Structures are given as structure tokens and as C-alpha cells.
Length: 160
Length: 121
Image 1 (cartoon, rainbow over the protein chains, first blue to last red):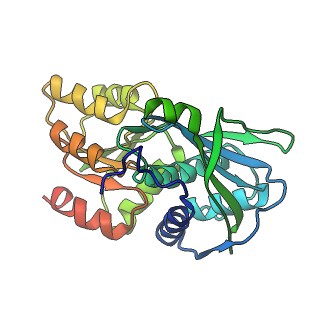
Image 2 (cartoon, chains in turn purple, red):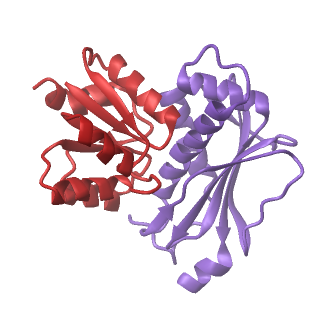
Image 3 (cartoon, each protein chain N blue to C red):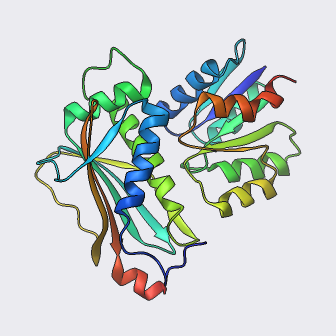
């Protein structure tokens, strides 16, 4: 069934878990498991905006060590040991793959923005009229991370 | 056989190269471009048998690149390797003349299956 903005399910936690599991098995050759609690103080956030028929944002949050380990596995680059532009690019692309697959469950006509990487702990990301519609935390042998899907409810109510 | 991989992510260009090797496509010369504009520039100095293009890219995206190639009468085959997975995007790509639509995440098996008939001819 094609998702309709008026019928859209307001919680995407299960879909996030499915997509993350698929991406890890396929492109990282690693298992990943959902964990009950968020990881404290993630220092790296990959942020992607959704627009068009559904406005909101996708966040992948993790610490530096997990970012490097995930990038190393993603690129199969054994000598990748420090957080640098290649890691930023890889984490942005990893977020892009996950967000792109989640887009399929959002209303037809939703568009996907380019990933941005935010670093540091002393910041907050606010989306106007934000409402978290999916949040999951994960652990794997490559590290741990959190994912949030945030809807701009004010804007989406106007679109509907 | 010469392939142009077009993606704004260096990481993904590396992964596509690696996946081509893992799929058993050896002896292929692979070049890279970071967006549609860079791809057109690359095509001015070299000819390619196949273009593997991302969809969402700055300056000129993949579907714009395909439209540009078609409008210029170029016959180079182009297919998408993208995180876009909706039916509307696949339909748009097919109608624009794309040879195939590979969705990220992908495996070497997917590359072998989808690209086999194109690269082995």
C-alpha cells in the first residue's frame, strides 16, 4: 500500500530496526541488535532532512570510536584508525542509505536531502514543531549508535 | 570495458568499485565523478560503456544527468545505484531510459545479476 500522509503511522521504530538490520547484514557483514536505552553523549551526528510531502529529519548519533569502526567496516579499510573526512563521508553515506530506505515508508512525494555531519557534545538540534516518530538504539561489534526520525508536525499538518 | 561511477560520496564510489570486483567483473577500467556536471566533463575526454550513477547529488543529480545525455543524443548506458527505493523513483528512472535501478544496500550478487548481461556482452 502506498503510504498516505493522512494515514501515516506515527511510530517507525520497527521499520528503523528492520532497515538497520538489513544494511548491517548487507554492507557491513555484521550483526546488530536493538538496545533498550540511548547512548550517552554521542559526539557525532549525521543529519538528513526530509522535505516535500513529509517534513522532518533523520539523525544517526554515535561516538567517535564507533564512527571510526563503522567507517572502517563500511569501506573495508583496515588502516582507518582516526576520525577524519573519510570517516565523516562514510558515516554520512551510511545515514543516507538508512534514511533512503526509510523514505519508502513515508508519503509519496517525500524528498531526501544531503547528509550533514555535526560534531561535538554541546549542541542541540531542533526541528520546528518536532515530534519523534521513531527512535532506536543499537549495539554491534562495530560500536553503538542511536537513530531518531523526527517529524515536523506543524508543517506536515499544513501539507495535509 | 570502461565504467564511470558517479556519486557525491567518495565512500560509496569506493564501495561500488569494490563490489564490481567482488561480483567478478575484472579487467574493467573504472573512473569516478562526484556529480552529474563532473560526469559530463569526464565524458568530454573519455568514452564510457556504462555509467553507474547515484540519484541525489549536488549541482546535477542522476536523473538530470540521464536527461542531459538523452537530449544530447548520447547512447551511453546509464543505470542507478541509489538509496532511493520508492516505486515512483524506479518508474521515473525507467521512463527516462535508465538501464537498471540498484537500491542501496546492495550485494555483489545483485551487481552480478543486474550488470551481468550488460558487462558480459
